[in-house]
Length: 253
Length: 366
Image (cartoon, rainbow over all chains, first blue to last red; front, top):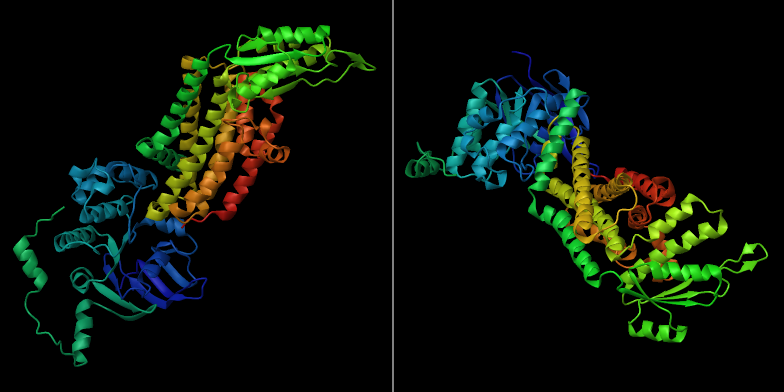
């Protein structure tokens, strides 16, 4: 196996009030992967991401990203990655192009703002303000801002929460497009279908620990091997497929 | 280094754009002060020259006191009467008179060590504090002119002081430096505290922290933006005063601008301290009001502090807005040089240092 792009060893986070949000987790992410972190609310997904990103201090253990120790060089790490926060917000009164230009100037590597907007299909919104965008457009713009510095890996924290099915599937296409260009993606999600479609491997977290880590297919196989039988008869299509079939794939922003 | 400069300049340009595109902010920092200047300017104009009525009572009748009375009569802004003290007091009570001046009997009389100490007494009409303050200001200058003449050999300086008193100061001359000081305070406290706290609550600041830029750059950018706006504010308000309401800038405008910028830095410090401490707008608003409200009324911006009880006057002497307002006023009205503004400059600097340490101590990024 190639050298991992991200390597996390026995990572722990304890807050000043004594609460242990992450209780010693280890995993590695290979270059080019889409790596998913799943888990119920409060499982420690966001805290884990933020520690790897250099956004939150690490209590113990190590996180190494592209050969850089995160706790020693958080600013160096931030220069190499793109971060989409769970509830992304941007400066008000600036247009999308102005915001992308501003983000450009905060890094050494830069991208053409219009080219980025084209990638996320927002060219015609270049002069609009973020507040005038729909939920899906906001998330796409937010992803565009993570790409300005040509990052080796981007972090997406629940990128599709609150989006309608069309917008969600549109965002899946975008993530796959980013992966095809060679950027590694580490994401969290609450939607199992999403993880199945997008993620090469998933880590399932609960109460600050990783309780399973494998490809979605293998995890399902392992479950079935334990003699699991779904109560619901598995159909060849889901209700969401029906919905998309009836309302069309066209995105409604 | 070059990258850091680019980061800072880019953040500053972005902050400026955000500022000028925010209508509410512009309304409060530019429109309201202009309205204030216009209102007070028109008030000052409609009352016109000679509208300050003043009664002078010469109990000394010495050569010096006669000179003093003549000087006062020479001020075109005054309508001078020489009624008896009793009549004058009655008129003052009825509001017919703005100021009652009594020249004490020992004014200009020689004692064992030359001229005796004498205090000219002036009573304001509290209903028209503006007129009273203006008149008091002019009287103070005449007296100080006489002081120089009485205690020192005749020098060019005394001639100059007398020249200053003939500048015909009016109410706008008293109120405009005050309004400028007030605008600077409000720009510093409100425009920073609220904008910055909202970047904190919406998560825009956190998004910035996800980049390799240290967020201190953003604080500098926000500060520089407010300083630019402050300079525009001063130019605009002083310009408006000079152009429309014959405001007199006796001192140097550069010195005036320097004190204004120093004051802006101090009040920006207050703004950042509040923004850094407060978790959200609901917390920032009462703190900002608590700080600015007492100063608004007690720093001698709209009415003079001379009528305060002495304990209150002593406390308000140390308000940063008092230092700023007095400093600006002394440059504009008295032609004071920076070297003569010791207490004001030291006061503002000390406040600046205090607020810097308070901000560093209280600041929270989240």
